[in-house]
Image (tube, rainbow, N blue to C red; front, side, top):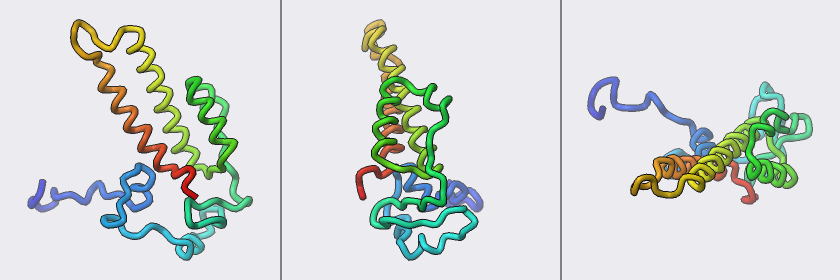
Length: 156
């Protein structure tokens, strides 16, 4: 609540990186993005040295393990999501955090497929009203687009 001591926000503050991951980053609100100079000083505790093209998203040196999805993660995806995963894995390398964001987006795509199949089977209207899953479909589509945008693929 605005104006009430201890209840006026700040408890759910996100870092600039978290805003980037969920697709809500704005330079005017969240400050400048990390630059190459800042990224070079990341502590070695994380087990990877950053290198590569800092104009886009950073890539990790060969010393850090490239991410690959687990077999059970791939099996849990729908057909369309598996095709997307195969195409993206051929074109890009991911660190473990980016890989988890990719998996979250593809799980969302799998849910979109299931919702679309249910709507196709039952029709867009149920008893003269819009299908109740249409709202869920819109929500999942928004989430998918935000997660996909957070990966910043093709912007290098």
